[in-house]
Image (cartoon, rainbow, N blue to C red; front, side, top):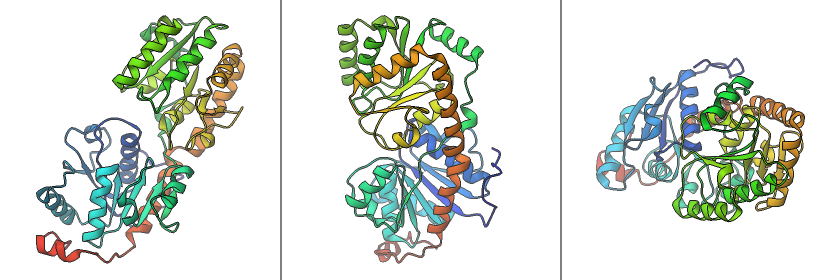
Length: 388
């Protein structure tokens, strides 16, 4: 991986333990992958703790990282095993992602002097947030939530949006679009609406299906491409709505896929109708590929999407607004292109990893300078797991 010239000058390398307790491919896993790759490129030593079979474990670009498999279980034996591995690595700072990893970070904070940084990829009411030396929120809403609900001090909070590697999501070329549509069995002249994300109640893809039915009244060549894993109960409900509206032949669902850049190439416009988000990477990826975006006004989406410039922001559940904007985009290819060009420029200049990963690195360095007093350090001494 090449370090962007905009990255801050190299300084003393750190030893960083990054803990991620999720196993699948999602926005959190992608964020951690990019962050580890960036930290390695900056000369830092990284110990990656992950569950057995985790998607992130065998990704390219992590050869320089040390890896350690843990169940993140709560048994004394597993806690001692992980603590001993951390002691051997001697991290200057721990960086945790997702609930079980956050719990391990909390225990490290209680039992040792090691500073802990937790990235809050969502909002939840949990005890562990209060124990971190720094908490990184990925949206202003998440930042406000953790200050108000989880009582994280303002001094400890930092707000850094999620980021992507825009080099992996270049602007879509005509030949690539044609090939992507052929592979999916989509007509070359279709107006393709797309959405990437698990098909679940939080993402509200049923709203997009209802919008498709409205768009088809004036644009019969419209198609909807849904990419993502299926939550059975919600997918069954979506299938029922599809049948009621008679749009089954205009809908393609791919299931969970690892070739999202190629699937984005088939689309003309991207819609995310979620009722709850923080800093969704799917929107940034679509923008980087040069797609106009229609998104609900939650989390960072109103920051990502500039109204009437890179797309449109709508209220959650406003199917009429989604439909109206899609109909306008279907009728005006030049406007779609102008919005897409603005979208890709925004993604590259504001949300690329070269811009935001250095900010996370700075927070880790800031935290590494903190010398904690272990609240229950005597317990670690008794177990023979105290840091050397």
